[in-house]
Amino acid sequence: MANQDIIPGLDIRETVDGRPSAKSPNRSAAVPAVKRSRPDPYIWGIYIMFLLISVVELFSASSTEVSASNVYSPLIRHSIFLALGLGVVLWLQNTHYILMRRFAWIFAILSLGLLVMSTVAGVEINGAQRAIRVAGMTIQPAEIVKLSVVLLLASILSKNQTPGGVTNRGIITSAIVVVVFAIFLYKDGLTNTILLMGVSISMFLIGGIQWQKFWMTLAIYGLCAGSLMMIKHANKKISTDDFDKVTIEATSGSGRGTEVSGGREETRGNRISRWLEGVHPEDPIDDMNRQVIFSKFAQANGGLMGQGPGNSRESARLPLAFSDYIYSIIVEDTGFVGGSLLLILFLLLVARAGRIAYKCSRAFPAFLIMGCAVMIVFQALVHMAIVTGLFPVSGQPLPFISKGGTSVLVMSAAIGMMLSVSRFAVTTGNKKDIRAELKELPEDMQAANFSDYQNKQ
Image (cartoon, rainbow, N blue to C red; front, side, top):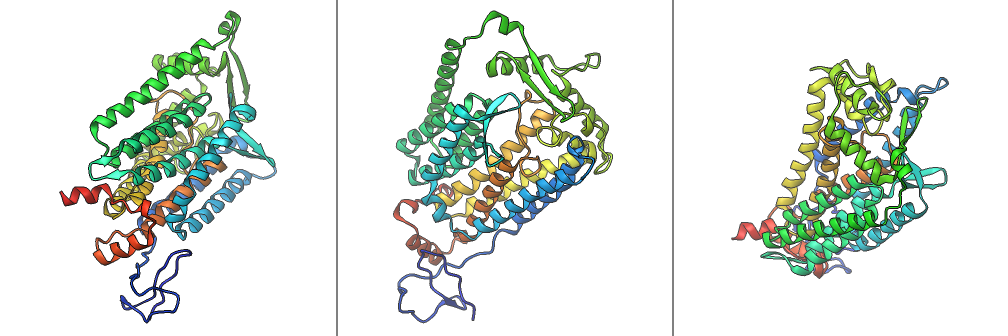
């Protein structure tokens, strides 16, 4: 006889060999028990692989941070955040996703407040005012915002799910949420803004949005982006001298190069121009192209099989090798084969999430697990695209692997939410389990999954 674990706040009965046990005084005999699955082992396996890669490659890429007294200090600091992230994963995988849905709006409002605070009174890092310093620690609100918007969109879209797709109210509310967050992200994070919109569009498509509404949403995004750029251009107050002046503050001792020019708009323009021009073998190495050139050196040095973990040559002179350009060090250490396997690992994560989401009977857990997976994988793809030269230079960490406490904790929380869905959502198709799940869920979380609608047609 096995006792079924009880979820706080839910009415779940004990079972004996899959049959209802004797009725307890505080439980209703009309509510059948929902069997609690184990957390998905494939997601766990992928997550553990990320942790192992992170420890090895972060140490390999941190040569510019190693102090003479303690060569392990960068690894120790990063391992602490990985351990905290593991704690977050364990906590969230044991928390029913109902509780996450309950605090979606509160989480979103708090993250928006942090984002506004970083814009108004944040500290400047690498030429952008996008962080908050609290008790000696630096918090990146943009990383928190991504997860909060995923959770909020999952709540809104699932609540407004219909057999025909998503209601007009759901689309409009979701678009407003994304636009509001994008406005505050845009000032110091154009890439984060694009990521946010990309994830939201993916969630719309996952939810079966009608094509007419999909194009309407894209038009709204385009109109808002155009209006924002026009306002920025109209309010731009940079003198002619500022256009001709480019000041580079490079601290070779720390391996960081910070570009300061006529504001973030000018910086973005310069980066896009240099990306379009590309780099050539005869180009002199300066602070404007140092990251791009040394990143390409590292990838070329990696060849097919790599130089071996810890044998990176370029980590000593590549700025931000331990964060924004860590993928180039991974390629140098493990070669084209290792870089490709890491890419496949991220793609397997979203594929596994898609499999679970397709089998969910309710809409909210399907949206949540896919939104978290898409957020993680999109950020990884953008990081790899920047490092390999497919996208202009921009600061995007590689999830779980790059140095950065906020990013590690947020991405760990996303994995924890995915594991919670894999554990508590009904994915068996068993009608008895589905009825029991409906009795547990609040009325506004009972909308059927879009894939369930499709299967019935």
